[in-house]
Amino acid sequence: MTGVFVSEGRQRVVIAVAGATRFMAGILMGTGMAVYAGDAGGSAFAVSMVLTAYFVGMTVFAPVWGAVADVTGRRRAVMVATGTLATLAVLPLVAVGEVGPPVRLPGLTVDGVWVLIGLRGLYAVFAVGFVPVMLSVVSARGGADGRGRSLGFFNSARAVGFSGGQVAVGTLLGLLAPSSLYLLIAAVSLLSTLAAA
Image (cartoon, rainbow, N blue to C red; front, side, top):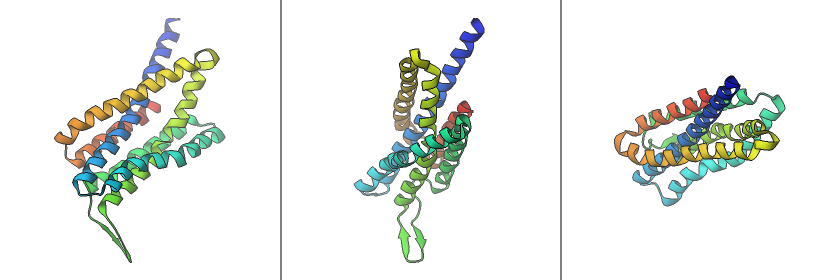
């Protein structure tokens, strides 16, 4: 009986760490980027798009990743693959820093703030693979009698990540250079991926 209890407790901790860190990474990135975009002279619209890009990615791609997990039956693999790709999507930001220079293409110049927004959207495409799959795992683990409690626990872990990220980013923006903050975000994202593995 003790072994079952320890295993159950350990699984809850792993789910809590995975959930909290996945959402913390997103909040650290979104809030940090919004501040950097504003400091670089980005318009109010551009600053709001930094935050909106994540939710556009979530709206479009969360159902896709949920369906991939359903069709393949490989929930853990989907979480690990999307988590790994989300972590890798953060790394170009280390080179970009606060707000990179405009990107010049033949006949088109893209302001550096929009590069941030695009990278935030790319991150979202993969980071949102975690949400529907983990909700499925948590719901199944709760069973018919404990589903609400199980989902409530997971949502509390997500809230810890959200609020912890908001509190931490205010301090980190004053302590870290943008490249260092993005490296930290990649590390937090990687921790979530490893916990899901």
